[in-house]
Length: 148
Image 1: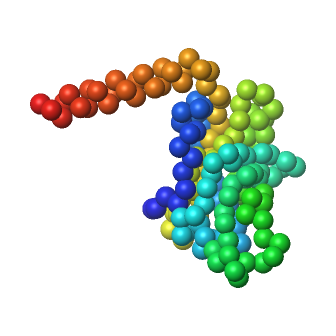
Image 2: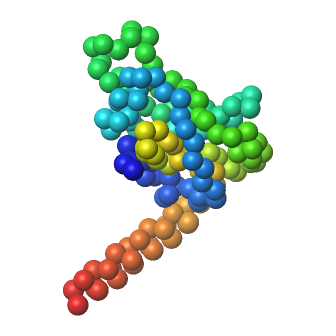
Image 3: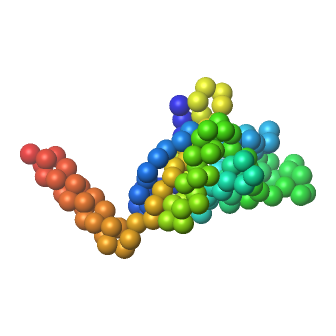
């Protein structure tokens, strides 16, 4: 299993409540581009509309820019593939204003490309400071242990 894209800021900016694994509906050239490692999840999010779930603002540039169709949009909305039960859970939780659905990473599972999405709650500024302090102390502890 190899990772193609990862949204690193999610773990810092949000508190992860629940994770889901979903498939993604892509065009053939988009699959090649994702496998080439050019996908970006920076600023991407997920919405539920009409019983379907979409990945918004994920950037997948064309595989070969000169051969791409003229009307190709790298930021187009892409449908995610989940069960009706999972979509219902996410739709119910999305109505809560403090919760958001964001993509964490894109990877392959066999021949399929999967997207790991999470239901998250935004962290406050003091929570972020606490995360930074914890990371620094862990780094110091590892450094001390390595010197011994």
